[in-house]
Amino acid sequence: MRDFWSQVKVEDNFKLFLNNLPGVQVFVKDIQGKFIYVNDEARQAFGASSNSEIIGCTDHDVFGAKLAENYLKSDRAVIDEKRAQTNIVELVPNRHGQVEWVVTTKIPLFSHDGELMGILGTCQNFGLVQKNLSPYFDIVAGVEYMEKNYALSF
Image (tube, rainbow, N blue to C red; front, top):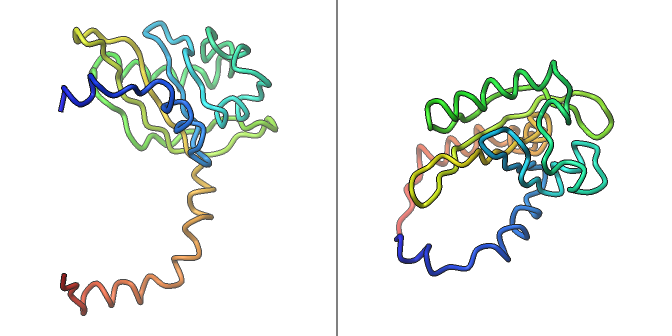
């Protein structure tokens, strides 16, 4: 598998992919907590008109001290434990200055030599996730019945 990834040219399509995840904010921070990358969804949610307003900034610069401390706490856990933190429910400001609940995942990024380089994270609006799933809540009973009573045969 390592041979596969060493041969794939990811850079060109990676940003295109990350900018086409509806409702998902993606960010990358270096080990000092400076933003290295944000996708369009994150940039817009942060209220910036261009990535240059965010790149090189820290959570304190973008969100202010109160919110930044919460974000830094989970960043530190990822860095100290060198392990992903998943399904973190937290408040983040949206582009209108209102705060909203999001589900955040952060994973450590390592160099090829195993050195911790930073964090890759995603935030997804909790309310939007619920809203997108709500039509399916009406058919849950039917789906559960089918799962229990009908076997798929291939």
